[in-house]
Length: 106
Image 1 (cartoon, rainbow, N blue to C red):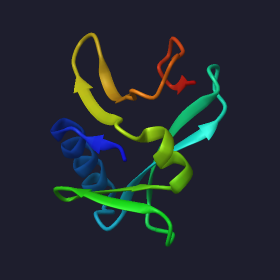
Image 2: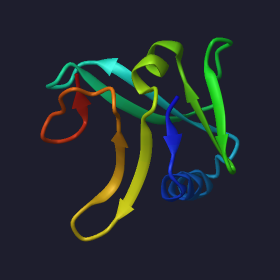
Image 3: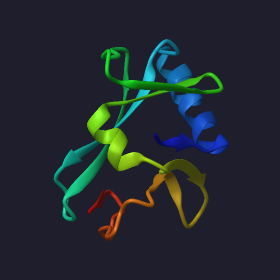
């Protein structure tokens, strides 16, 4: 299961509050595609399937489907807000190769 750093959890909470959707969770998924074979997908979701994994990080809930959970085991989601790097980044120890943009892996 993927974990969230404190910075990522804080930013997700801010985004949920800005949307007025604090009842939703962040869904993190892996989908076929991208230049390296798989791509990450993140969006706010209120639907939790019976086989989804739901984990809380403070006030933030994260949902992962079973197929994605296998590919995200041991991964972490971070958020950086700096001059060189800004935005969310997934550090995935299961990725053997990533693309230049950092949005896909194999």
